[in-house]
Image 1 (spheres, one colour):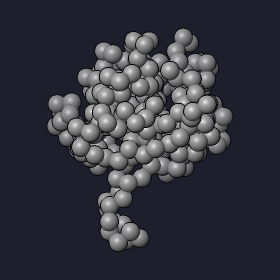
Image 2 (cartoon, helix red, strand yellow; image 1 turned 180 degrees about the horizontal axis):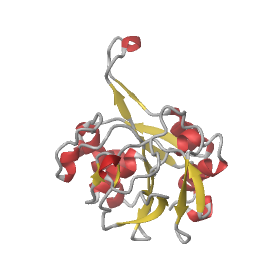
Image 3 (cartoon, helix red, strand yellow; image 1 turned 135 degrees about the vertical axis):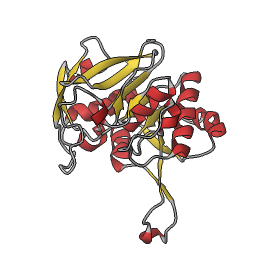
Image 4 (spheres, one colour; image 1 turned 180 degrees about the vertical axis):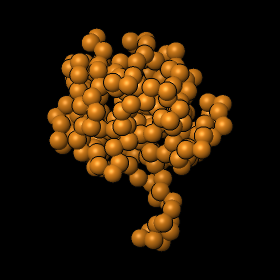
Amino acid sequence: MKKPIIGIAANQHYQNNQDFFDQQFTYSPQGFIDGVHQAGGIPVLLPISDPELAGEYIETIDKLLLAGGQDVTPFLYNEEPHPKLGPTSVDRDRFEMALIKEAIKQDKPILTVCRGTQLLNVTLGGTLYQDLSEYPDWEVKHDMFPTVPDFGLHSITIKGDSTLAPLFGERAQVNSYHHQALRDLAESLVPIAWSSDRIVEAVESRERNTKILGVQWHPELTRQNDPKEQSLFDFFVQEFE
């Protein structure tokens, strides 16, 4: 049986690259590669490119995975930059937005992680808290730095009839490595998991025929310590159709 080809939208490193003679390089965290391999898929990196090429990239893959990274550029949801906004990459934002739109158009399943979920929400018309200090009910540490994110840090409650519930149950511990969060949710998405301070931790498509699943935590970092996190990769690669 043909193994599914999983397109992983790659990031670009361009600062302090002495080991690479200050050349830019394209990369993805190894946990995504290993998670897809273990799930029986073939990972293929999609480098930041011209958004007009997104359709051709999506045609070459079976499913799309968006990883974490920089903050999302706020003018993409009509806001000025907050004083606590971190590094951004509008080239990455625009290319990945085009990938999302093409994957939906071509009926390819999408899994998004952390920043990927935030960008998904913006692409579909939602907004973000540029920093959690904007959220009035912030009570949970969502950025576990300097603790290494190899284990779950805070709890989440999962909607019982959601895509995630069969994998994680209705309550789970997840790691957390973000200072931005979903604010106004896009109309085409529904929330399916929350932290105890009611930050949205996972979403899925409102339309059951559109296969979109987004999580705010980093399963690629905990998959070796928590079988449920690897099961997310297994489900996405083998079953999410």
